[in-house]
Length: 168
Image 1: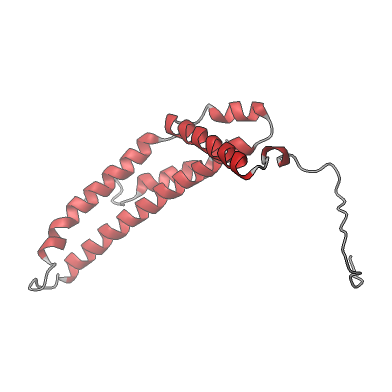
Image 2: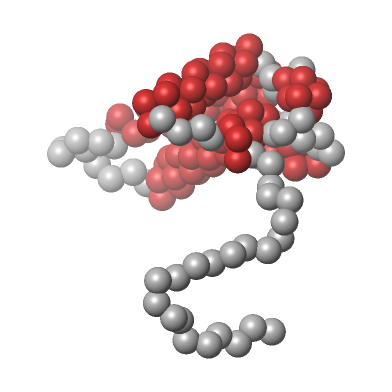
């Protein structure tokens, strides 16, 4: 059974998310080694349970004994868990890459861009191009509204007289 030294599958995926959560940086350095480990473990798990799946699938195949059914279930669940952890990590990084674009300080952009992998830099360039194309097509400027308004008061005008509202 492909597991780490403690006898638990999915430790690399758990460690990847743990490091991401405990990082005090906005965007920690990209961990391609951990993602490669997760992929390799998924491949090992699948290779381990595939012969059992093939042997017990089909119309005339006998049902698997409980121990084999438990093994198949364990492997499939571990693969799905690893996949969810990797996708969560990548989704967090995509959101952070997009936040780098929307941050208002150029110094912040440069500092965070240093931790991007080359594929993430390409994603950021494509994201910027997509926003630029949308602004041209829709004839709208999205970049001007990044900074919050200076005043906290908002004036609301209506065509009809609204009922009195109590605020507290």
